[in-house]
Image (cartoon, rainbow, N blue to C red; front, top):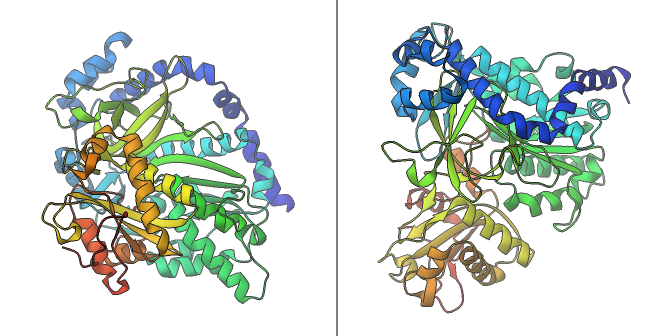
Length: 552
């Protein structure tokens, strides 16, 4: 163990001692969550009282409202917004460096987000928001310590961040725009920067195939002990690193042979379950074998760092209630209503799906971020803990089947685990009546990266169908006797097909995510066109015809 490196871990552990003790007291946070969130809202209102938005919405008065009336008064004064609602102010702030519009001063940093189903958005990242992200990052280390990890041991090796490009563009006013990873780079200072990979030169790269190659070269001989990033890109990097090690003549059967001191994989951004078998296989050589010793899930967004897993093995993520963000949750069925009902984290109900609405220390006021969550724990019974179950714009309801992302992800994970097969990325879409894909029948199509023997696709389709029925009564009704919907149609694609498609759209790497479903065929048809040369079969469950790949 390197003495200077170990001292970094010792220092960080000492810095976090009080926070670790505080976070460990779940009962305390159950009691304090309400007061903490009210305090955050009051701080936000007071901080922005003299901005243009604050004056227009009477923030000077609201900031001094009685605690019992504070939230209701805020809701009465400020409507819920989407990006388009705030776009005129955001554009003035970013393009003209106007000050005191939505947040005090000039915001010089902007995170560019580009979903595969909508255009680019530019999210403000104020100095206060950078502090928010820094505090949340420290909480990740604190929770990792609570999980039993030794920070001195971690920092005696290398920490690998699978982030987006750190390259930024700067306009004539000094406004910087780029991936959130690039904006947050300033938070990684010496001595922590001395143990971080990849190098700054590699981190700047935006072309992900080149970036993966460079990262692999930098990591192949490194003592990696902590990895943070999305699982889909982790798998790509892990496999390439092992290939390089074998090219060096080393005996590497799995990632554990190469990085025996790896302690933790911090992941977020997508549902991990569909990737679990592949991660286990890469790590131990067996999809049913041991996992990376510790996995810790986080819930970061460009708008703010929302939640962190606080209990090993528990999928619930504890809401970060004391980091200068105020959270509300709108029932998904009300999100498009003129005056939707909003609930604080202690006003929600278990079993109900909510769209996340955030008020942030960067000037996003009651802003819909689009994620759909469900709560596992609610104050005062426990700290507010939630799970991401999808996006409110990503669903399939072409025939009254009411499928959400979680149904499809769970079904894919269940079918692949039941059959002990390895799959990759996937997306689902409706098949409309009259389509040649299903002999004119309505149904569901799943395009999925498939590794190995395709003779079991019939079994997979059957298992997928049953798993969706188990979760969704509307789908079950539509599938009864094959009357409303035909059995699902499976289109196998080669591993890497979705990365190829995303690269063709300029959406490869970083925090870009493969959309798991859509209520139209735009995405799935585009993916199939990109991979048309592969010519895999279309496969229904037994009793249904096998059809050609050609998209509609």
